[in-house]
Amino acid sequence: MDPRVFRRFCEIAYSQAGISIKEGKESLVSARVAKRVRSLGLSSEKEYLAHLEADETGDELVSFLDAISTNYTRFFREPDHFDAVATAVGRWSAAGQRRFKLWSAASSSGEEPYTLAITLLERCPGVEFELLATDISTRVLGRASAAVYDAGIHETVARPLLDRYFVRGHDADGDPTYTVAPAVRRRLLFRRLNLAEVPYPMRGPLDIVFCRNVMIYFDLAGRQKVVSEVERLLKPGGMFVVGHSETLEGTRSSLRRIGSSVFCKPSVGSRRSMRPLAKAGAT
Image: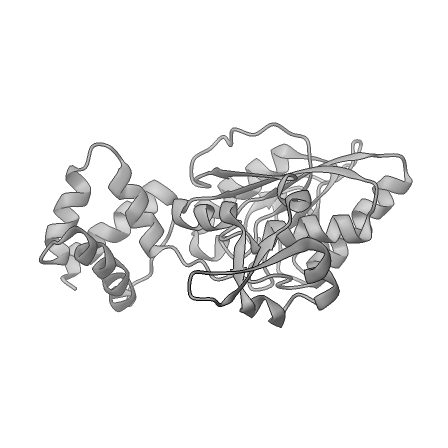
């Protein structure tokens, strides 16, 4: 890829979505952009860049960001996080709270927010909850809303849960499919959201926020935006969960670490001040 074209793609990804693409990723960007080049019947990456910059509707920008975004996920990924959710909600419920608000900030194709919903239905029966699921990619949000998954779901979802929370079917080729049951789907609301654009439009206070495996693509300024907005939206004592491969190191926050990649907003009256978070294990 021409270095100037690569740098311009990087600038667009960063300015529009906070995605920081490092040097040396030319082949990755080229492969992702090639899909749009073929789809639009264009002849080169340079021609596609011109098309992207000339599009005043914003539609191609969405398609570009969809193409370069990584959307790997699965049900019950990093399962200790869902154990932490069940424990926290169980504790709050025992203290008298009956309604809960959760946000899956980078929901991808739906596996994470559906796992959250299944966890609460299975392990915290009787509690009422609302779950907002957002992503920058309209493509994966469409898949999430459809809620249809293939037989690979067997790898991470136990059969009793498949029986209770999914409806079996078949696709046009006769291969088995598993559709999330209506009782689970009605708890979720899917919306497109760009985490680089602040302030976020939802209302707090939120009990739990999942923002896993997305901030690894942001620089420190981008991570600070996310952390500050999540902290604003969380209730005192609320939980913020990031991916095991991520860190909040260097961001200024009053959040305190309570587990592996799990953070808590201090309760009202806490004297904990805003300060840069240190590495895991530091105090």
